Image 1 (cartoon, rainbow, N blue to C red):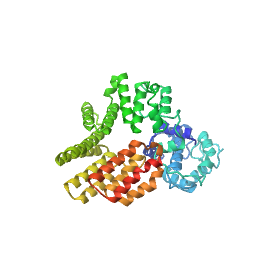
Image 2: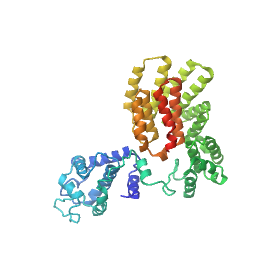
Image 3: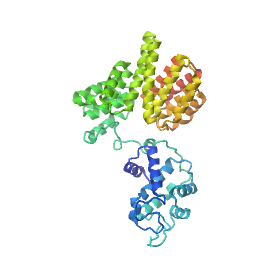
Image 4: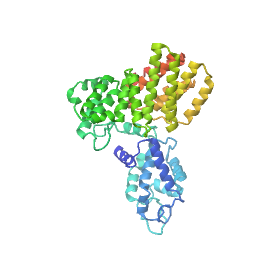
Length: 448
């Protein structure tokens, strides 16, 4: 299948992540179980010739999803034999029937009522499509060469973003979405070098548009490290729409910019007000941002006044917030930051490090962590560093960085990671191995 066909079927089932793809396949596998009874004409019945029944079970789509999954994500299926074994195990279908299907035997066979079909999926259109792609699908040399770790990475690699396929970072709803001309204009301005992007933002014509357009510009500017430009764009957004002052995404971005400008107290005020106004809606992102600002403010204040008691108090406040979010969603991000703060407080209080290491390992094992992008990749490296597995951390950096989609790694990603590790190094862990890793990450800019 070409990119457009793959994208179409993924969009059809709203599949945007590898876990969602796996969940969809699990649903199909359950539907194919012989004990599954949801319609009168069960497609598992050998005598069933009702094509509509097959359509109800979405079997042609299921086969296509299996093809996508196995070709691009399932490395342990390396040839046709393994693929047959996989289908036998998970579809509860006879091996002979699967072989007939996969080897395209009896492609023109007429399905007759009362006759056991050698092809289990009597859908002529799909069979034709399958046969057309059979040679490509089982080209043993090229099959499974790329082990994609996310749907987004796969789509980006298989088909470079153009003005036609470009999707803005933020689009509130269809009614308020940017018009196509604005989306193309946004694409032209942001999909370039940082220097050219900065130049583009000096052109007044590029700063004219809807509030949605300007807000997207601000998001891209922030991610490229253009904080002054991002703040200027937010001010323009408010001039067009005062309603934006109340939007969660707007306030979150403003808090990030203020924190980046070392105005964490202002950021904390905004985030606490946002939480107070939305008490019934627990927003993990806002709580995570609040904890991060409290932590940064704690160290800024300590630099000025050397008040260790105040430092401990604020770090504990941030730690408790992160732990609450982790308990809520088992996400790796608050878990990692909770672990960071536990280690920091342990160093300050000179407590037993072994018990903290054991707790960290337990918490990390319970998170939803799976490497799909820069954040999930580097968080695993940071975790290994914290628990003292420096060699494993270095191996992760050396072995897996090249697999990441470099287009998705921004200057903000790298600077945030370096800031966190440098903070830990400066205050708590003057280890040569940690210093080496920080320098290694600092050189990553040259590879992007």
